Image 1 (cartoon, rainbow, N blue to C red):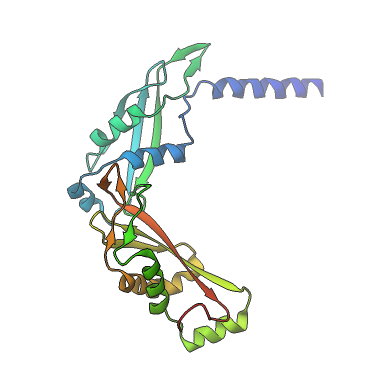
Image 2 (cartoon, rainbow, N blue to C red):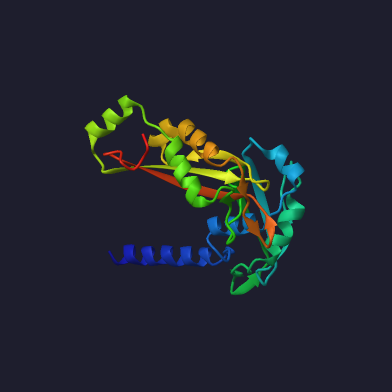
Length: 235
């Protein structure tokens, strides 16, 4: 039993030492990627070529003994994004140092993420708004959305919930047009085409969101609540 415990503690100590020999990004990897995308400004001509594709960015970061990114590399950089990404990661906070035998060492950190029409957008304070105004937009969506008699009967009969939320995400382009519609709940994908028609009829054009005063692509999430008594909709 004693030998078993000694082996266990030796194993834990070895793992702790190994863990200290790897550089650690300043944020969780997911947040680190979001920070890159937030500042990334892909030329419109380049992004147009990327549309409809899931482009995997295989980013390699070369770190010095202070945890600073001193060089970046993207193998097979089809869309030549490295010049746009490099200054962004160099401006982000430093990595936690690599420690080998108690000494800080330079190292390399690899990070892969997907860029596509759904993931490339900005988080902004000045959000996009419909040209008709948000209140009128919501009213028009409710008026343009419909349920068939059969659908109303089925939902009324089920009554597993008092409310049914139909949630859809979409992107507002820099020019205020809409694209990349995607239902948040797969169970509600049945309503996707109907929701898209209702949203586009409510406001075909939007005033785009701005980041540092410049129009950018932004994401918008819209929720339409269906009540089992259906008094919330003009249907």
